[in-house]
Length: 70
Picture 1 (cartoon, helix red, strand yellow):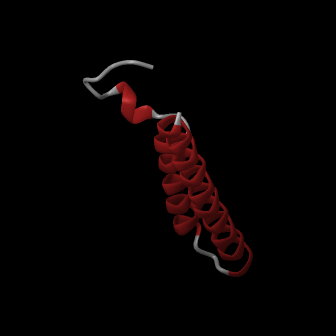
Picture 2: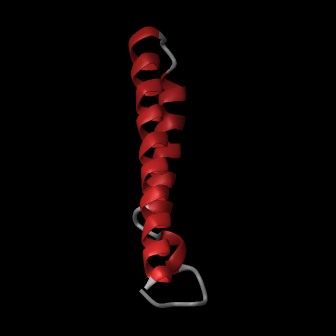
């Protein structure tokens, strides 16, 4: 039972960290969009955020692993 609780705690902690990273990137995007004319940087930040979402929330890496399983 402790192992399952530990895994859940780790997953929640990781989710909170990823949420913080995405929030920080969104704030950076906002300030760049409002104060700087750097559209290319906004595109780069959007791509970084997309990769983070795909990796940590959609678990795309599992699709390409040999372990299989869902």
